[in-house]
Image 1: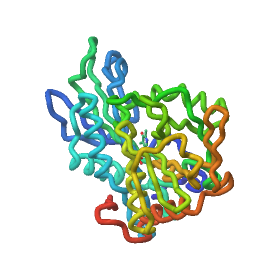
Image 2: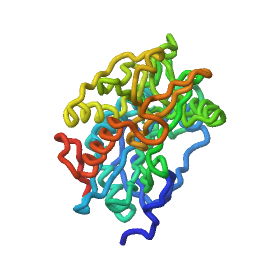
Image 3: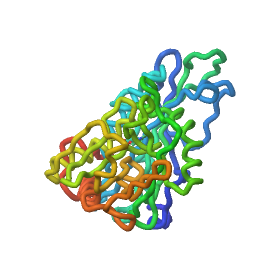
Length: 340
Ligand SMILES: *Cc1c(COP(=O)(O)O)cnc(C)c1O
């Protein structure tokens, strides 16, 4: 029985569902894992995650297709990225095979929570891992939990896809040779002050610069960025300190192979932003959100696409990727993972 939820009016928030997946790591190995009903996690007060933020996470979505199949978009990429995050944080890795198996188990167990096709909503999937046993000195935990919970979510931005505004903050997101390229909770903890500051100034998000020279564009707190040139070339920043977004990598492929556009990853300087005609943020939560304005300490960069609707290329990229994700048009090999 599908749950009695007003799917069309869901926000982007947590909703408790029936089951979550848990696997525990102890004495050098992961247990076989299980589905549990209790949404609470009980851990020691001196757990490494609580004292020293030893935790990483992932985010992906499951969709119902027209044929009532449930599919995920490139979950193997999330599995691989989580392995990289775990290594950087001295955590044990959870294999790609087991990651995919756990996704299947937890989504199927919560099948009735997957929003229907055409509702605009989807099932958000949150895998995460943390050091759970008591430690005191600064060192990695010896016990860990890998968990996945799911929650139905509506579109990230309500009321259609209206362009958003960004500001260039005085804060940095990622140090050279730091942790900007992995999905660690710590990157988000230190972004909270900056995001509250941006909101207080009337902006939706911060657009971070590279912290070494503060001249190059990196990304926002939770999404990568793309630009469109006046010749309809899609460009995105190349940097070792941004999080390798699966949405961004997919969009660059779509631009080139579905839309026949040139797609380039290269260094992008703050100085050149006024030369672009479109700008958009990309990530699992929002897919693609158009940016109308970027404010750099009182100097406003206004994109010709304006503040009313997405630019033409942004809209095409969005429509094409959404259609691939919903299985309405053919996907590149391996992009669609069937769950049921
Ligand atoms: C998760 C995340 C993204 C988006 O990545 P997707 O794989 O597209 O969801 C972008 N930037 C940061 C900092 C992130 O944490």
